[in-house]
Length: 139
Image: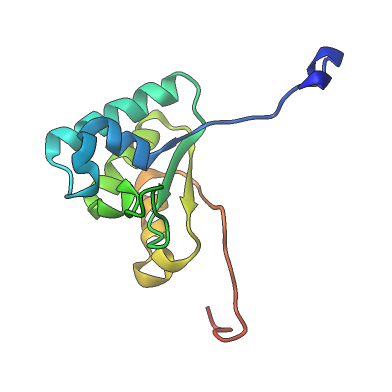
C-alpha cells in the first residue's frame, strides 16, 4: 500500500458471493435447507443492490469440498438449482456482470450447470479453477 503514494493504481474488483447473499437472506437456516421464494427474492435484491453499487458480478460454488470454519458445507451447497439461477438472472436483467464458478469443473461435467447458467443469464461464466488429470484425459 505504500506504493499508492506514488500514484500506482490498485486493480481490484468485487464479486457478490452466493453463500454470503444466502446467509444474509436466511440467517442460520442457510446451512439447513433450501430457500423459500421470499428468501430467493431477498437474495435477488441484495445482488441487484450490489451490482448497482459497483460489484463486478456473482460468485457461485457447487464444490462439495468447500466448508465453513466449523466444518459445515458452505451455504451455497444447500441451494436448489432454481435458487442459483435467480440471482444470476439479475445480472441478465441488468445486462452486466460476470459469474465466477468456484470449485472446478464438477458442476459442469455433471449436467452442464454452468453452461446453462450462462445461457439463461446471458452472462459469461469464468472458472477460478479448472483442473485436468491424466487419469481422465477425455474430461
